[in-house]
Length: 378
Image (cartoon, rainbow, N blue to C red; front, top):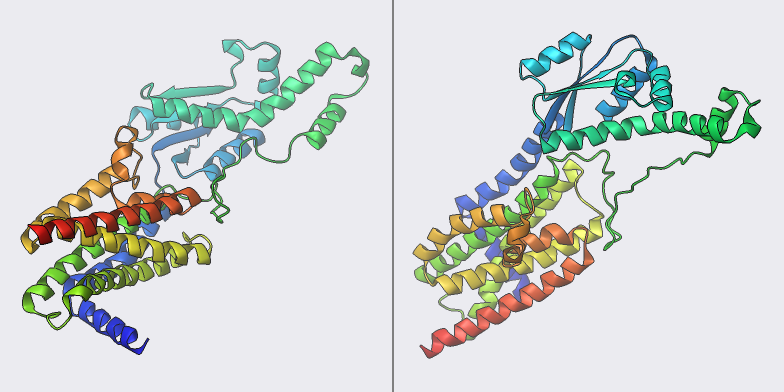
């Protein structure tokens, strides 16, 4: 154990003498807190102007619910319908949703006779895009609870004459008492019991951070592979027996990945993006081993420092594009499994991907060993 600890200290000391490695460590908190700062700003995929044709409490309530509901859409309150329309015409908003005057009674009128002249929300859009169509579903969802009360009351009046003597207020009171008190749809990861953030409070920009950190850790492993080649050329490990060289290389890679991963874990904790601590630590250890074996395999396949240095930026770009960091490319999904970040990103909430990460590491080890035997024979 004393010998292992000594090697651990020496390999750590070796890493911190490399300016590029120290730079990578500094980049991690900058990345997390930089994204966090952006995420706290008003930002969204769409900008939608909200306005009401009168001082209506229900319209004000619905508009506030929309504004508080998601980060994907940036809602802007406008004093008048004209100012909302002007935002659309001036390209400052993608759409305007204008609520009619006396909204509650307008809803009841529409339920009684659903024709165009009884519509209670006016939608003005710059274009009829898929994203705006999806946004209208958000509007429909916000209005569903209020419309359902009107549909309920209308149905009772038309189909249950036994309740004609009961006042509308009494019927609605019963409806509100027995209506569901939870959401129609619940967000959950079925493959894991990992604790997750409330999806209503999660910011879509911050979900990218974990993917970027996975790529940064892989980058650190590849950089460490280059350091190992340099150390081999300068004779740093010349006294190490040949049979122990693979173990030393593995130690170099794992320690590099653990250092970067530890800083990444601390940054995730401070940003409030970490799941349960035990799962994060287990993932960090598994991913460090995976990245170490990936870097060792790339180093052995490339053979020399020049080729590793050439393919390193290419691999980083490929991982950013193909792995599910920003989005999941269905057409290239099979290629994702060639790179470590895919397993780490998915294993956060999936026990199956954690097992796949172990199998992927075993496959990398097999390639590393087999290619080493081929090189010896040649």
